[in-house]
Structures are given as structure tokens and as C-alpha cells.
Image (cartoon, rainbow over all chains, first blue to last red; front, side, top):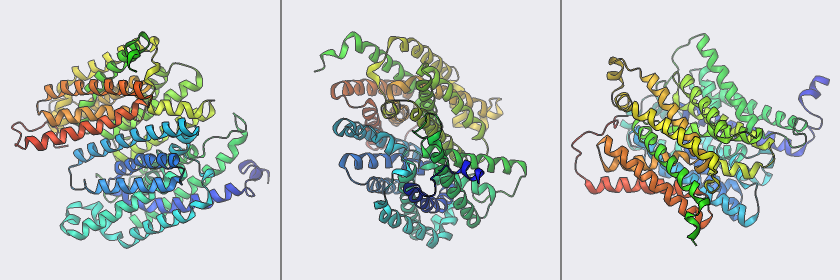
Length: 295
Length: 277
């Protein structure tokens, strides 16, 4: 019993915000994991990160306008997806450059919007809440948004599972299939944008890549089969979010006492630790080449 | 309204931003050439962590940013060689940012410091900061210019460079170090999130305007200088964050480059170096 108390500080299971955070965190983690596995296999970690930075603009605008941040996250991620889709056919180097330029512009805009909301509304916490987030602060009013972003994203992954995998293993072969391949890739970008928006809501805009890419990359070290890797990624993501919430709750009694450490920090740290452990394992006993390696 | 722009107080800002621009223009030219865009975006987040740690411990921002960008470079060079490069870069980036936010949250001025470290605060450049900046800028531009040929060779034809006894991995490490140094000195002025815009916007435009590496390098520095000067005037006039102007300027430079390319419309006689990447 005392061990249990040492891990879960008193009041953990009866705390309303904590329970809400546990449920929402798990849902978001389960959406991000399969989408993230595809993102890693398709070599789109940078694109995913660009979405993350772009969502910071939408989040900042939402704070300035006084509307729900998830609306801003989703709208800006969708705009990012649309502009990225227009760049789909380019060479890698050029694509990275355009991606970088766009995300730089988006971050610049966030700087202005956050500055304006800080000076006009006196909400000095906007920078931190948009960029680094806190799952404890996500209200239950966001549930309709979470479900209407998360379920379609999962549906896209389920419906277009095979063509998406083909695109990750052999882009040329997928491209040869013509119009349908473009549709599939556009739908996938939409799913990616939706997942980034959800992740931004829970762990903050600039950190949201962690939940998307981290568990997926760790899982691909454990299993080279995409289906199994998605299951692993889901488990790793949920465990990271839940353990992060537990640690953040415990940290209220750590120095500086009473303030608590950011929950997003714990989630990102755990995700990174999972990746490091998985990689160390891969190195120790070499396996078959995971599918889509050398992207 | 702009009368105080050249007052003694602002002089340090002019000098510091100019130094930052030269270093970013030179290093950024090779960032674009070598396609190290994502790395150049990740390393500044390491500098952010360092600056946050320095704020917590009360030591020099430059020192903290320098140490942590070095750590970020080490992590990228060490772990990025095997496996999926972009995944490692993404994870190094987010763990650095998250750690930085932890340091700042434990300190007392969380929100305000977070904002200025991420988006820059150029109007408060002190003279104590100036000389280390100049030294660091000289070191990193020197490093890049000395290895100019190697950088060109390893980015244009890595196999050829390997055959000639130049190790691409070693060149890459030194190059990441130069990015780290440029980042460190740019962080207090431009902010962690927008150092990157300064590094890729001007060089991208410069490369579209000319195919000759030497001319493009000079042009890149010139455009970076124009960017930071304009941003400084804009920030002084409006009191808006400098990073905003830098980010927008980078987009404008990119569009200008694209426009110039479309306008020229002729096939370039010399193949652009590094376009295969």
C-alpha cells in the first residue's frame, strides 16, 4: 500500500482533472500512434514537425480571438496540409527548403500573435500554454473536436492501409497507380494534420511531434511488421502519457514545492526514453531490416 | 518616431544584429546547399535549453546556449548516423524544447523568459555580450570558409570526396558545430525558433538568383544583413517581436527567388551545385 502511495500521490484517483486527462490522453495517443508509424515509414518526420510548428500559429490566433485552441490547431494544420500537398511532387531538398520557409513564416506569425495577446489581454501565459501545453488544462468541451478529428484520421489509416504502405516502401510504384495514389496521399496528409492538432492540444504545439514520431519510431525498432508496430506504438504512447500524468501529479511535492513540473516535459522525456531503449535493443541483437528503411 | 534608432543604446543592437547576420548568411548558405534544413532547425532548440538553464542558474546566456548547442550537435552527429535521420532530429528537437520549458517553469519568470528566448529580444543587447558574439561569429565563419571546398565537394559529390580522402562524416560534424556556433550567438537576438529562418531564407533566394557559389555566398550574406536591419527597424518602430519580421522576410526572400527563377526561364548553363540533394 505504501508503495502504491509512493507512486500515486494521495488523491490521484479521485482528482477530476487527472481522470479527464487520463482518458483524453489515451484517446489522443491511440490516434497518433498508427498515423505516426506511417509518417515514419514514409519519411515524413520533418513534414509532421512542420505541421506542429504551423499549429502554433493557429493556436496563438485562437487565444487572441478568444476561441477554443483546438479550432486554431486544426485549421492551421489543415492549411499546412493543403500547402504541403501542393508541394508533393518536388525533389526532397527543395521540399525541405519550402517546408522550412513556411514553418519559419508561421513561427514568425505566432511570435506576433502571442505578443499581441500578451500586451492586449494581459494573458502572459499564452506563450507557454500554446507552445508547451498542459493536458490538465484541456476542458471537456473539447471532446467533440477530439472525436471529430481523431475518428476520421483512424478511418483513413484503416481504409487506405495497403496503398499507404505501398507508398512508403516504393513511392515510384505507388505513383504509377496515378490519380488514386494522389488521393490516398492527400487523405493521409489530412490524417497527419488532424493527429498533429490533437497532439498539440495535449502536449503543446511545438512539442506535438514527440507523440506522433517518438512511439512510432520506438515501435518500429520492436517489430518490422507495420500492423504490429502500430499496436506497439499505441501501447508506448498510452504508457508515456499516463506515466507522464502520474509523474506530473507527483511533482507538486518536488521543488519548487506546490508548482509542479510541466506534464508535457514528462511525456516527451518518456517517449524519448522509449525510443532510446528500443534502439539500444535493436543494436544489441540485429534483426531483419525493417520495412521502408533508408528512406 | 525613428529618431532614437541610432542612439548609443541602439548601437549595440545594430552591431550585434549585423554580426549575427553575417554568420547566419555564411553558415546558412551551406545549410541550404547541403540540405541540412532540419538539423539547422533542431540545433537552435538546444541553444534554447541552454539559455533556459543559464537563466535558472544565473550564468551567461551565451555560455549556456553554447554548451547545449554543442550537446545537440553531438546527439545529432552520434545518433543521426544510423537509422532514420529525421526521426532522431525530431526527437532531439522536442526533448531539448521540453527540457528548456522545464528549466523555465522551475524558475520565476516562466512566460516572459520563454517568449524572449523563443522569439528574440534584440533591443536589450549589452556591451558585455558584443565581444563574445564577434569572437564566436569570426570562429564559425572562419571554420566554414576554411573548409569551403570540402563543404562544396562533400555536398555535391559525397562518393568523390570519400575517394579523395575527405571523410563526409567528419566534415558533417564540423559543419554542425558551425551551425551550433552561429545559433548560439543568434539566439539572444533573433530567438531560438527564428534563427533558422535567417539561416535559410536569404541563402535560398541567393541560390535562385545566381548559380555561382562564390557570388551566391556573398549575396546570401548581403540579404541576411538587409533582413536583420529591416527587422531591427521594424521591431524598434512597432515594438513587435523581431522574430516576426525575420520569419516574414524569409518567406519574402524565398518568393523573390522563385519569382526570379521563373522570370529568367532559361536553362542554367552551369548545373547548380548540390541540386541533386
